[in-house]
Length: 363
Image 1 (spheres, rainbow, N blue to C red):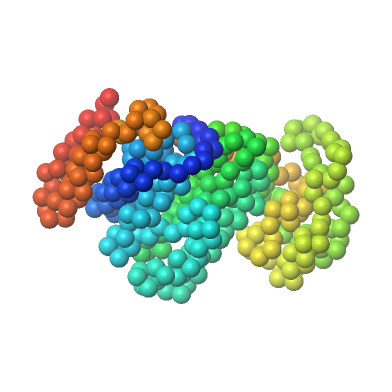
Image 2: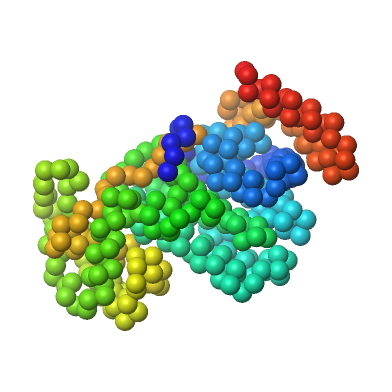
């Protein structure tokens, strides 16, 4: 995972005003089509996986630069502005209940993209695994409430999902990119953005490799052998062992965890990804296996928070200044006209925009 600057996402409530969202949708669509026209759909996917580009696009189209709502509003604008039949790219999912509709939405777009049954199954698996990794393997006290899955006709995809921690009053955004993914269970993220760090059990870390391996071995043995193994709920990440006895055990092998482990035992997964993919195997099961592996075999998982800090027209709440509607509308018309003219072979405005972009790089 690369370091890419800094970003802060305080947790904000409320809605984007209709007058602004209407303009955000138009300008977001125009900018996205300009990128597709010049560089192709895969380049847009790549840029959306970059938290700096994503945050900059949200600022450019007028949302609060410092708000967690930028994530949900910008992905909503992308979803409403991009047309799969025309643009060759689809945005599914969203906030709350919409995040649970991703699989059905993939089915509805499969015919448009002429996707094979294997491609459809892989997209669904990728969406499910990304959600499971960020909720079960990265145990950072942030609960996922927004999931956005973006994919093209070739089966390439991007995941942008966000969790919240009401106690910390902060949000955390997770970025994934299929073309840069080598493993779902070992450091799969392009970036994780947050302004706060917590004590985190990171089972995706390179340092957790032995824990992952031993967890598979443990679950392939009869899970009844695990019962009673957990006598300590926490292990110090420091080099010098320091054990702290809590008032109550933080991890218990509950009947639900036992049932999931029994199911895993019956399936006999060949690797950690297959273990994680088993339905019912969640954060409790994986944490129990990790702590048992540490207690019995001395394989220490990573307790380092994997978060990486990453971070025109004004902002919704007047920061850094109120949105100037007339200027905003002119930008929308310019971008839409530039894309239309480029398709017709008249690229004068497009070239002017590129010259302007090159000029701003020198500022």
